[in-house]
Image 1 (cartoon, rainbow, N blue to C red):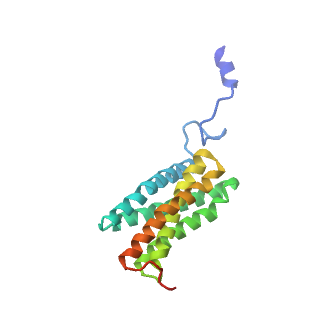
Image 2: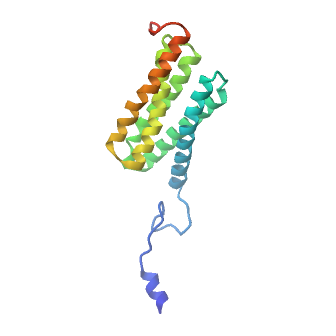
Image 3: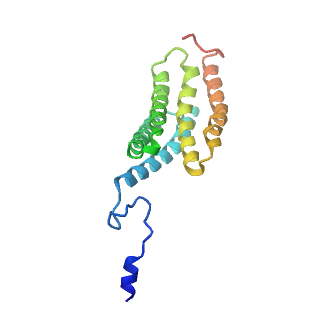
Length: 176
């Protein structure tokens, strides 16, 4: 008698489940979102670890490669999420910009581009700021989250620029 009534009740669906999918089936989108979150968290940890290792004069090649890898993964997963949900299409340019900042920042130093000491902190710092901004936007939805990380991020970027210019004895950037 109760079974009949329970069968007609609407059950609350777990996140990522659709009404037509069997209970316990994980959607591909859920896996991509989970991977996106895990990679983003790894990037938030690897960024400062890389910076601290470099400041201490250690070889940070593995940390650098790890950071570059997770930022690429975050950008790729954000792109996949964006193409699966029309409301997230705006993530595509943000994902591409974040990856471009990270890769260009690493290349600037490696290839010793003119003025790299001025550009690298902005580029790598910008990729990290994008990760922080993503977390804040996802967790709070507050529009201030778009601006606050960029403003606060200028202090460590300025400190890194000052330190890099002190190394070569100049305060002014090399001509481009």
